[in-house]
Image (cartoon, rainbow, N blue to C red; front, side):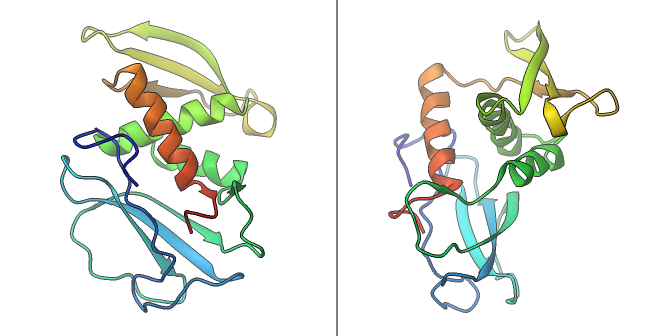
Length: 179
């Protein structure tokens, strides 16, 4: 998928609907591990889907994010592949990330704020003109015994952020055109 156009800072390749190790078509009920790889900072992130029972294929590049999901029955459009708990867990696991992982985490934070799972506690401007945001979880994701998280705004313009959020939304849902 390349909705952001050539040379954009955050593009993701389209899912194939097949296991990258075995070539088997993904079927309802299959447990799948999805991995996003960065092969080169100037190229789109490569999405690789692997059946959980299969070995991870040889792949050049650095893993940016990974999660496990089950191929749903009926393949309904815009059905979430990641529930709120899984998305929050992925956000937490990416703490301290750099490069594209840091951008991915920032975008996850925006999505979690839209869902009102994370709330803004404060922000500070950095010397480079970007902002650092302090976020706290709400409901079962928050509370006095839970930490706050620092998220740094990446150097992306509003149009790039909006396009990247759209890309992530497609990536994290089970749309009919994105297996």
